[in-house]
Image 1 (cartoon, rainbow, N blue to C red):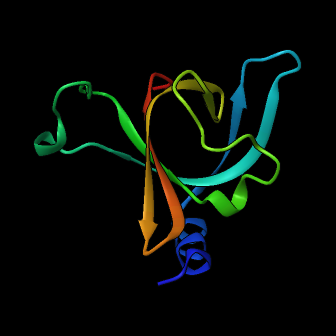
Image 2 (image 1 turned 30 degrees about the horizontal axis):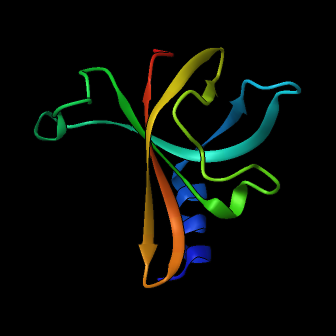
Image 3 (image 1 turned 90 degrees about the vertical axis):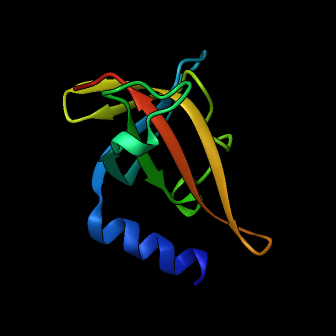
Length: 106
């Protein structure tokens, strides 16, 4: 499965979000991502109940200074969540998605 195919799947199941990095000037990009809650089995060190996983495609980031990092913010409708951690997911040597652990904005 290619990165483009994974992007299409994320877009099909996802929602419109805004990713921002507090800076001077701030860095902002509109994206589509898939947000889901962690299961009880996934709760471990550093993952709190209420945290969520956001999956996004690196193909959507444009000129964003990739990858996203801890402290970046996600605007979910009118609520803001903060990125706690980021996992880079590869298929072979192709970066196909980012899985972000986000907190807040509920």
